[in-house]
Length: 303
Length: 239
Image 1: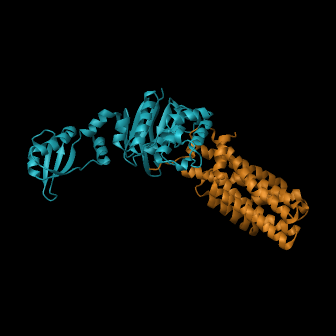
Image 2: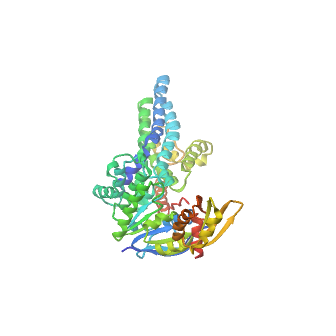
Image 3: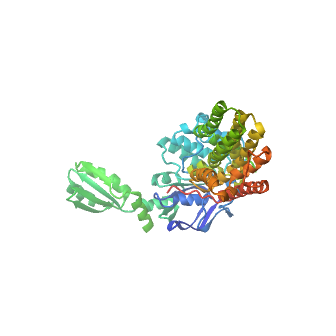
């Protein structure tokens, strides 16, 4: 059982506060660190991994300081966001080197390569790898010593859906085995699919923490706004407002569209096409007008 | 103190295609010039000494030292791949010491060896000139590698600073301002060469004892400090 603890951690660069007084505990299982780009996720992960000193506060792993403590890496596996990784080596050479640096041998490396299913390309140079293959080899290098804590910075960036699913399966398995797995992401769906527990960071602050279902509910239960164009806007508006999933509709004459505020996201999305069909109305445009991640987060922060 | 895996990663990165070309070009140039000079002027001790002192020791050794010393760690820090070394239960001074050994070896192979060959071509090691300059190159390889490895650890512009030191301080400033010569790796190594060659073809502005003390002090201090800097190396996020 490995627990990573952040106690009133802040980090500033000159006048810019990147991380502002964050206290959190990350335990076994998969935890998602969610936040928009520039929220301070990488700074936070760098401090968790011992690559950056907190300006104030402490980061500890089972009570041991992380910063300036090389021995801590016996327990930590790190998958950095940056691409660079000794491209002149083959995948196998790279993972073997990582194993050796832990005092392990080729056997541990081979096992890690098998775990990430990269044996088929292990003798190719890393410079010929696709993004997803690189990500998997990085993952293998982080797994060679069987760490109890795995830190991954934006691991799904640039992966195709199949590679994403494979990596998710792998991380899920790691979490099921009782490891502490923390990954950062700015994409809600990724976190939702994978994390049991999420920590939300917005503008350097700890905005929310807890069970993803609870936070997701907060996110989905917020009023959603849609812009809808149809063959008969007024008839559609009349039919929709009768249902409790809709709390307000504005006929925007200038835009030639309806601005709809829905309070029950699930119900509204199934209601809209049904109502349109029943009334013989053609839907021309249905677009969410506040789905940007920032608006979701700002709603969360306010909640 | 020495980690064979770190060494392997370091020399493979150092001797990667492009860098190996640069490392190989200067020694080849030195040898080619030596062949031409010998062909045109015949074997002459003074010419041999001038060429080995002016081109090999004053220019080639420091430049090779810059490439090997900064190249042993700078690119890894720049592109972030050093994280794979730092995220291991490895003492930071072990990483630095290992990289220093590799940088020294590479500098020696690409500077001292060609110096020896060039010396034999120029005057067949008459008056021990080839051997003396080779020893000077070996000695200065150690100090240059240590200084430039430190530079590669602390600065992103290590190559530029390194070349400025090697070319402006050592070559230009040193020849104009006598005091600057006391603080010159080249002069320290010349003191050693002077001792080996005897005679008056090679001379240094620094005494052998001072030179030896300074060589050792600079090498040890630079290596120690690089280890300290690596311990506190901050990998900035990409945000």
